[in-house]
Length: 234
Ligand code: OAD
Image 1 (cartoon, rainbow, N blue to C red):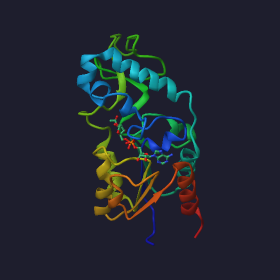
Image 2: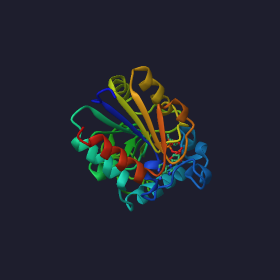
Image 3: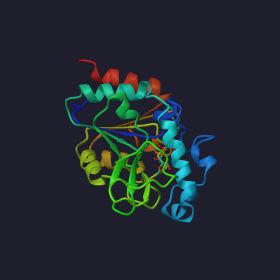
């Protein structure tokens, strides 16, 4: 095997499932309970801001009541130990990677515990409901929205993500269905730039075909085993 130095890890809702957070597309998932157009688009927010704020208020509250699981903890351990470049690109809006202790984390779809002001563009750490229309601490306007990326909006920090993918020797995707772009396309970019690619997911995903290797199982089991093997002295 070629020497691995630079690693990019993409995570999705499946890594937080064992912590008790609903995924989007599994049976009973969030997109079975709510219409994407209503709660995850700028148009939906313009139509009914209160409905959208209440949806994210409930999710913000829920994430503060759960804890990281063994998969988050294993990635945090890898982050601490890995001397080469490492970037955890998460599509998740929870803070479970950070609470497990990971530092090199990028939230490409934003964060539930952050509010974005539509009036002055400032961002603020936020734990309380937004449906009560609190004033923005920056400009005083009641214009705060969830700091999450909706369909039709540009994910965060794409330049930084592609720069890391270009340098990656190993690209690993964990707990994501491969249904949403641009994240779903990262595996092909990584391969094109010469990385080895590995998928860890409960079942085969829409993108499994593109990976050199795809392992099926629960993240809480697969991720610690993979990290242990990677950190094993050769
Ligand atoms: P999905 O709900 O689409 O996919 C979750 C994946 O995790 C599925 O393939 C499951 O099989 C897998 N899974 C479930 N439980 C698991 C477990 N215990 N261990 C390992 N895998 C498990 O969620 P995402 O792929 O994250 O975007 O969705 C991508 C984006 O679509 C989200 O960030 C969100 C959503 O619409 C926006 O809101 C912009």
